[in-house]
Image (cartoon, rainbow, N blue to C red):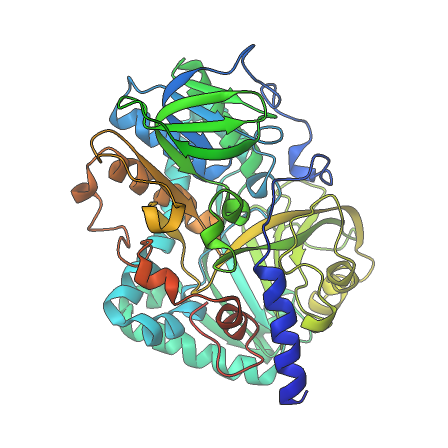
Length: 488
């Protein structure tokens, strides 16, 4: 591909990333995870509360985590959670079921981009989610078991020689700075892959990972929050505008599709849709539509869902695979990005999850047969899409929303504030829960309690950081077809 064509394509795609993402479409594709729906899926009050302490926009893992941790810190708070569709109907209820950090794959670029100290802090933060979510599920007792939160052996199989060489280099670089992880991670060459039931790959890297049924798991947590009486869940209630009020006790108003609610704090947890209410973020935090499938497997396909998950890493792009821990052994398989090249991709900047991704599906229907010894005959039973949010530098935005970003005058910090937790770059399950915990502390003025484990500076929303972001820069790093990829 020539330089002029690259540049033309870059500008074309960049224009898509700079669009207003709008609000979630009304009739999304049906996610396997969301059947059956929670009993509270369509809950809303007879009338919207006129005032509340905190409005959380979004009912996914981020919003639920923030609500839970706010109440753990201050149980008297009144919280209203707004959701444009049914509860947990966005990315949390539509993802791949992984709780998977890929530290060896990311650390090399992180260290180059931000230095050793920051890279180590971000990496440890991501890795901490597996233990944290396992503990949260255990704390729910019998009720938590429905979420199938479990530790598994994660196998990343690499199907390209150059990518395999790079993977080995990255693994060694990571282990040099994390020597305590050497016993938990291993590298396996082509001749060993039969032990993993993998074919056609150059090698694989194995290490600790996790899997879950996030819709059910988060549903149990949200149901318990609703039982406290401190949380009002308002589904089918779209946030249309955030504005400052003149009331000193409630400095913000959130205009919704039903009515207006006054609040002290408003927290944006809408991920790929965040730029709709915060237009400054257009082209800086942008949506990407992802494709998921459930695939039935032949009788001789090993049933390893209770103990293993996989990633298939190609010359361009990768896929993510978990498996049902039940006798059916169904594969939960998603990905397929850019397999036909970015010029054929319709998913960048796309928030329409009522439609499927034809390019991704064409690839995903053949993955099992290409990658697994017993994968021939695997067929797609269910398919749906979901919307992720990516930032211009590959790191989330977790911070106060200052006036340069919102266009709104900031109140006295003691009176309240506007906040954001979004931009998970496709790895929500190893960012959202602890980011929600951290933001709850920050909102309540207890920031000093989280600084030893939360990447506060790296995830901040400073003007200096955001001004460096552009759609073109993000695409250069994300696609890597113009220059060297960034940390994203």
